[in-house]
Image (tube, rainbow over the protein chains, first blue to last red):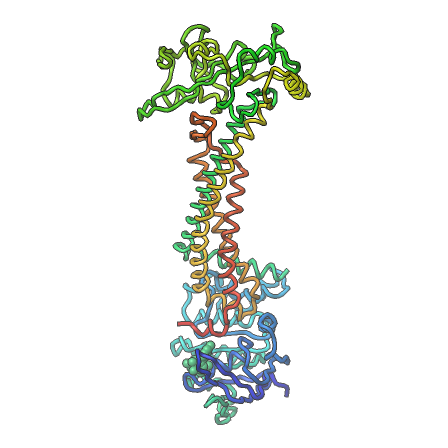
Length: 234
Length: 396
Ligand SMILES: Nc1ncnc2c1ncn2[C@@H]1O[C@H](COP(=O)(O)OP(=O)(O)OP(=O)(O)O)[C@@H](O)[C@H]1O
Ligand SMILES: [Mg+2]
């Protein structure tokens, strides 16, 4: 089976003033297509750093990053932006919706980068709204929505341009238990029904349990947790 | 196509956010409004001033001064030279067949300002019987004409409004008491409107002079000026210079005009530097307050170009808004406002109407755009170079 992401010998160092910290040491990772992967680990262990490399938001200091069939560790920032538009949907802890735009306008944003006509965009937005169960809230501004609803809008926005990969950094970190399981259920459904690969960073074991595979970031390397396939199949 | 859509989406989003940054935005608008208002006011003086001076001159008249005199005040044309000038070719004739020539005397008299009581020098011009044929734009608006031989005066409209000189006012000079019998205008606040007129022979005898300051003639037609000039140069008894009146006035106003422009550009430039720093500051603040929004858009795949354009568009919009407010202020407060200025060589202060022309307003908008673009450029570059991953992570 082909990989949606493969990282080889990836090193990431940050330079802060005179001091250099190496967050990822020669890290290797293979994520098969259609996998729902949870990344766990203590705060500061490098989860976000790793996710940013996979999502093409940042470049490694050394090593090879191949995502969605393309080697992205050498791309310029302009090339990366175009690549992200085609292949990655992002879901953030604090939703990152545009406060002045309605839900449907927020969801439409990634489509502005495509050649779709306005009628086609409208149709796709309506379908995405329905998928996340917010058809009745299309005209609402983010401030008029609950946290869970805002995260649904964010998920619809991440999906609208049909990315290869969904990248989520603590998508339920800011939500209560009920909304969180709601959102995680939605992500899981998308993964199972649409076959979207998902890579999700979380602190929360309960959240990680929705994934088909869990990896721990530990001392700059990845450690496989016990196989989840039995648990999730149940 | 999608690039334009991208840009317009980001620009639109940014502009919709503007009301939330009202304070910082106002800094830009007010700063630029100030620059444009000051620039336009000073330049409106320059425009009004040159219009007035140039308006006092006509291409149909020639001004004759004594040789080498650069200004009327420095010129003296002897009385016995006047007949020779009158006989020269190229001069238009009145209905009675007389050449339209007027030899004029200029003196200075003191008048007291109605409100402040401050004495001011005003030009007193002695004119001959051909004056009204020579300058058809001059006409009485009240009273009657002075009579030769009597100490009678007519005053320009702007002296009436500024110094309260009116029919019945008395002025005393050269041991005589002179009375105002009429008010004239020459269509708008121009040079002559700031003067007092009387009969030239009466004035010559009061001052016991036998020379005039200048001789002005009406030219017969195109080509007459060269004809006249050649004839006067060929006369060995005459030592005079001839100018087309409008060209002479224009040359006279050129230097002052230039000075006014430099003052305008200098003060405007200093204020522009201030406004520029204000704009830089506000726009840097705007970019950092938008950094999460920008980083999110970049993560979604929006290009840095659209981010740059959005910052520049904000800068331009605010600048142009400021320019329009500044231009409106200059126009409301100063357009048509009658100001006066002392000019060396044109001794009494000249009244002129400041004029905020469409050309000046365009100039103001151009200045504003330049300030806005420079002020927006560096913040725009910062926005475009925003490290996306770090900005996204800097949340809370
Ligand atoms: N842009 C940066 N410049 C310098 N150091 C950074 C930068 N980003 C992250 N770091 C450092 O790298 C380490 C890993 O950060 P990272 O954000 O990847 O951790 P994390 O596992 O996501 O933590 P958390 O669970 O708190 O989100 C931390 O020590 C952090 O301080
Ligand atoms: Mg993190």
